[in-house]
Length: 224
Image (cartoon, rainbow, N blue to C red; front, side, top):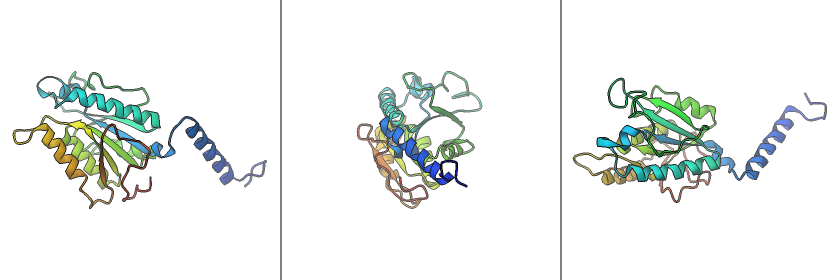
């Protein structure tokens, strides 16, 4: 049924959509970036200080801050994910569990708690992304070979193309591989996975342009 001005519901919705688009462009926001979410994984005090301080953690925090600044400026969703254990190391509410010192967090950012390397497993993350209309992900954080790797692979399985910020994830390394070897290995390996459909693209903090069609095509979320 048309309204009193002769416009049907479809016309009203179209006018509203045009108004939103004009407002976004006026604010300098790319409409494509509204479909993007930045996941900042496990950048917590217990992983950035003391005996478990990850490789170049403070430099990585600085780069993550620049990435999150870009995301917010573009109107993208920013999600901080925190790992927790039932007792001891990274126990919920402890100092080690808190987000790392120096990490910039804004009131508009979201937080999600997790208990496994997979940020989607037994969490509300997938629902949150769906509720916000997110189709593409930017991922950074720590540790590279655990939660960053697992979350990236799960995102692909769920249909999300991923930009992995190649210089904004880090690790402690292990007795066989140095941290830089782990980081380089995962930048190379994750970008070579094609069987899920969606792909991973590794991009530096400097070159990252959220909403600038940096995402590989493929998968049910393709097209942004």
